[in-house]
Image 1: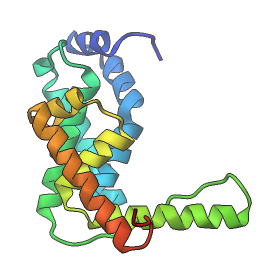
Image 2: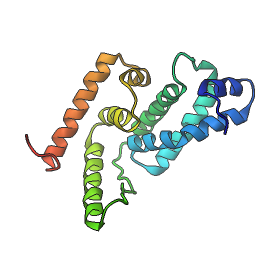
Image 3: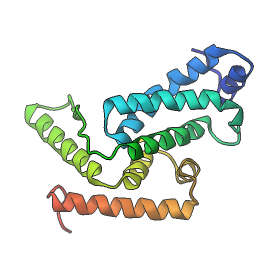
Length: 182
């Protein structure tokens, strides 16, 4: 793997160097997959979204603008692909693998796993736009500016939607007894 920047790899790819695109895929495949899975809630669908994301990125690489981070541009494609996938199917799919932890003793691991499952279930009960914005902000750690670009929304709208998504999640967590009423 080279130490080239994403922008340089994109330039190399546009010049015909397919290995440069392979490096971009290697850098971001896991992150795109994990985010897609959080949105579409299904392993196989997340694989499809990841594949279509990189295919679309490759096909439209000439449209990438270096003033934006490549990662943000790629995320925008991934979110659009994931949202299309969610719109295509109208069924509720449970995640088949649960979050697990390997730290601490068995009792602590059990409690952490239970908490992770309850949080995951609560996230899945949110509407898709709320889940997407929470995943992108808290799991992908995108800034407000990056969220604005990825979601194609003004920053104040991003902040407002993130606030509402957090509030909805808090209500679900309170209802399930995960959070204590203050």
